[in-house]
Amino acid sequence: MRENYTIGVDIGGTYVRIGAQKNDDPLTGFEKILRESALGDTSPIEGIGAFISDYLEKNFPRLNIDAVGIGFPSTLSKDRRTIYHTPNIEGLDNSPISDILEQKIKTPIFLEKDVNILFKWDIYNKRLPEKGIGLGIYFGTGIGNAITINGELLIGRDGIAGELGHVPVIGGSGMCGCGNSGCFECYASGRRLVELRESYFGDTEIRDLFSEHRDSTILKEFVEAMACVVATEINIFNPHFIILGGGIVNMKDFPRKLLDEYIYNHSRHPVPSGGLPLYYSDDSDRNGVLGSIYMARGKLNVADNTRS
Ligand SMILES: [Zn+2]
Image 1 (cartoon, rainbow, N blue to C red):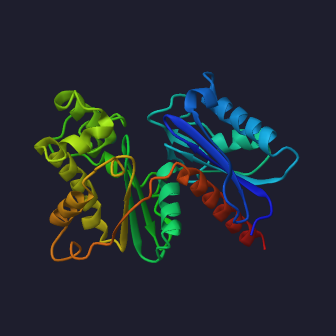
Image 2: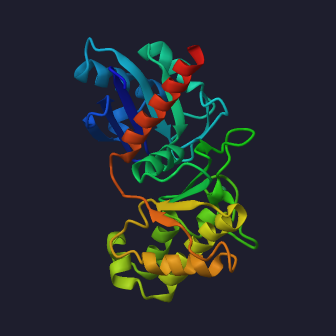
């Protein structure tokens, strides 16, 4: 139990979301603001600092704050205190952002890759057992990926494990947001879906694509490409559970059954394809903020246990 408020922040390419929680009370003070207006148009690091300070001043003046957890759409250093690379937000890269924000806000600041935060929150929220290997694959603008082993995030030697979207496709083409070409993201992401709409379904709003064209060969091939991405990781890890999420699988009339079938087809037979433990993430605006709070509290508990 934590007596003070913990703050969660979810920095996205388009929106910034923030909220606070005390004990197990419901989330309070939730705000969702366009990134440009939340962070201003000067340095985004100064913008984030000013945004959090103003939020605390407005909502929780004179109250103690335990910690601030922040999710970034970025690769992070192994110690989770420096941002390496952020494809969709300029001005954040190679900055020791925890140190800078702790000086300004005078509260412990904990960072994590946004998809890791979402995946850990989904495991907790769905009450899945942490034991074993878990895979999270989130199809949004890009492809988010998180891997847990007995509840611990796999982060790799340099901190950037789980970049499934940037696995190269043999013979692949197209420039990827990471700077390489022909990555999985060039074939199975929101960015690709936008390209397909422009090329083939110009009269349909993006939100209606699956309602109006789910039986077209073009969209079936797109769904199969998503399945190939998922099956790649299934065939490597033979996981205990897989959570699929992100904006695409939550679009109106998205064919989840077809995706499940294609994943089954492309997974190795007879196992792990038989009885694949597939789950779908609930698409809530608040999950990133709740997950950031959950992550920050977890790190505070580790720090408390280390001290005692
Ligand atoms: Zn890439």
